[in-house]
Image 1 (cartoon, rainbow, N blue to C red):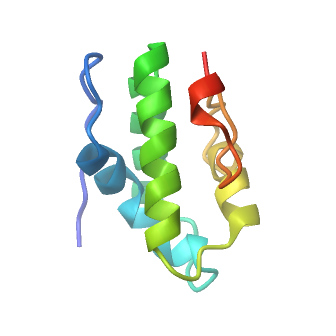
Image 2: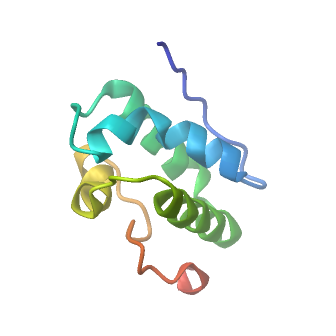
Length: 103
């Protein structure tokens, strides 16, 4: 399967866009597959979209909701994913992150 990640618009980020960006990472996040270029491309696209406070908060909330509904996600791998992909996102990927406090 070929997934092409395109940078998201700077306006509003939808949860569908967030899920689409991170879906290539699911096998890695479940500790049953390697970290792949399509996964990192998705993480980089999210980072590019996180340019405003509302977008960062929306991305955070979408990731938290997705993590709740996806079984078998390794929280340590999720937290380290941005660094493994060479990006520094402005918040921690964690179920305990308070998205409302993200600036």
